[in-house]
Length: 82
Image (tube, rainbow, N blue to C red; front, side, top):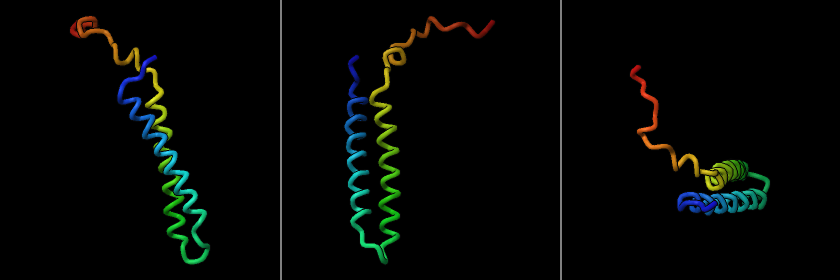
């Protein structure tokens, strides 16, 4: 199935988010042990954020939207008056 432009963009940003998570994890690992705990904690929080964002964007980018985007016309909806 062909993906629309928004899904392709979401996949690209998911990959960038995963790469940012790896970069932050490497940065946290490279920090010296003493006196840099707040920096290490911030980098590890960034890892959690980027991995979560990557998962969400990956799901959006790989979702099957054929039935959602091509919904029934408004005339086919049941009437709620009676």
